[in-house]
Image (cartoon, rainbow, N blue to C red; front, side):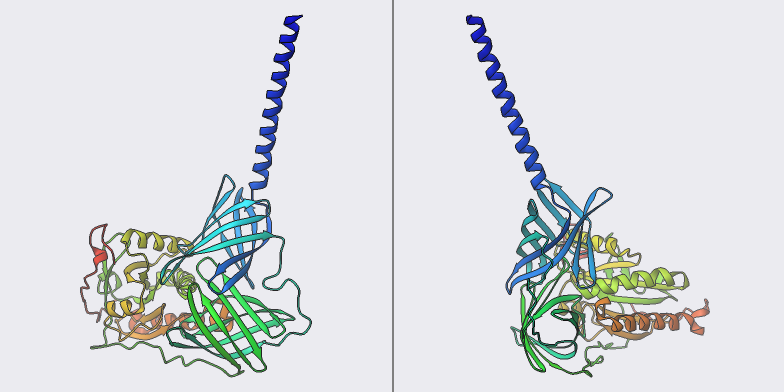
Length: 446
């Protein structure tokens, strides 16, 4: 009888243990299910100095791995460098030293985004919810102002510096897309809404977080603009003929009119424009930076042009001015940039990401107004054209015109009778050995 009672106690204890294990397993299984990212469409929000910056994105799987597609108007930015561990998602954005980290709870995400800005790293709180398909306003207003068309725009930052621009907007009921175009390039694909006389736009691609808030008063718009932690006020008036002065920000050659430089590549080996490898070649030199959105747009175009024309004597050299101070960090950012755009041409590390620093590093030019700035140099070493900025795909017809202009000038320089004679070596580049700390040991900085 005693043995039976003992056996019953042991059995009950065994059953309780098994039950507890089953509960733990069920909880673990539920936790795994709840913390796995759900595929589908999301509305993300960044908490910026200007307020909530919304954007839309899709989460899908390709070849068994998570992939994000960030949506801004007709643009879909693919983010494939993603890891998910214990319910936390880590993503690195293509071409930019920016990251997203978020904890996953069913169809909701909470975390932060780290951006590289002129003032250093900017960390923004981030949240997302599955299924919400609106950008700013969940319900469209019935009577909305009309912003479609072209606008003459002026931005004034908190230091009082003014930038002229034109805006081109398309509108369908309350939905608005478009961009701002400046001498340095465009603001990329923007998307937003009009609600009555309130006008809001935003864009987030991983490299830039742009937010615009404004009020519409007939043929005028007035509002504020945040680009990361930079703030400006802007005003616009409707003008179908508005345009920019394309000659206002073109650098000029100084001294004897000969452009030259010496900077290190990713392998730390100095490269000069006077090197034999460039003699008798058509050379495009772009002064650029991985943090510049316009430099990204230009890099995609130049990578294609280089592959098309390199066999006929085209060389492309990018002089990259980077925010990372240490050589290794700058080289890492540049390596990611090269991979993202399939860059086969030379990229040199030229100095810190600052227009004044770039101007000082290139005394052959009187000034660098913007990243990118591109020089077209013929086979005899003569600078035929200098182009400031780059209009990307978001600028529509301007992008097609810019690409056609680049292509036509390359063709012209490659097809000249002087260029076709292989014996012509009237190479006029001068050499100026420029001392750069980045040429030094691996611990050096610039």
